[in-house]
Amino acid sequence: MNKDPGDEQAMSLEFSLESLNFIRAGEASSELKQRLNKLGFRPELVRRAAIAAYEAEMNVIIHAEKGTMKVEITPARLLVLVEDEGPGISNIEQAMQEGFSTASEAIRELGFGAGMGLPNIKRCADDLEIQSTPGRGTRLKITINNEQR
Ligand SMILES: Nc1ncnc2c1ncn2[C@@H]1O[C@H](COP(=O)(O)OP(=O)(O)O)[C@@H](O)[C@H]1O
Ligand SMILES: [Mg+2]
Image 1 (tube, rainbow, N blue to C red):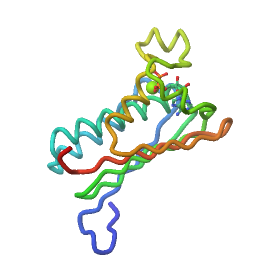
Image 2 (image 1 turned 45 degrees about the horizontal axis):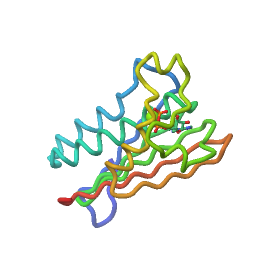
Image 3 (image 1 turned 90 degrees about the vertical axis):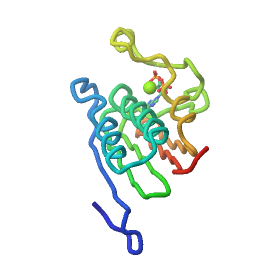
Image 4 (image 1 turned 45 degrees about the vertical axis):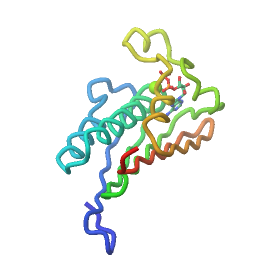
């Protein structure tokens, strides 16, 4: 729990994410969801944050090597930062297309790889920034504002 000076209600969370660990898959986003519910955020905002965080978490588990999810929570907005070490995304525009996926057959058999993750994150976020260096890794910054949309 970090406190910014002048912002008594600021809070931050951090989770580590591990490639292909399907036992722990979804834990980070599900804990985030519980925390946001306990903090009293509106169900609609909690739902959007949980979906965006889940898709970003699964992308690290499925497509990268390892990573972290850091969440900064203030009454005004949620900031979800997901950084990984992995192959990166060479063509972000293509990766953002609905249905585009490079997931293997084995991953698809587990029910993943529909190619809807990044488009869903975009839909749930008020702002989405993606930075990626092929061969190094990817960084997603997801902003969700706490206001009626
Ligand atoms: N963290 C990541 N690291 C490397 N590639 C990624 C990452 N996230 C997404 N991608 C690439 O973008 C594509 C589309 O992602 P997404 O829309 O979540 O669909 P899916 O995960 O079902 O393949 C992935 O198939 C993959 O090629
Ligand atoms: Mg995905």
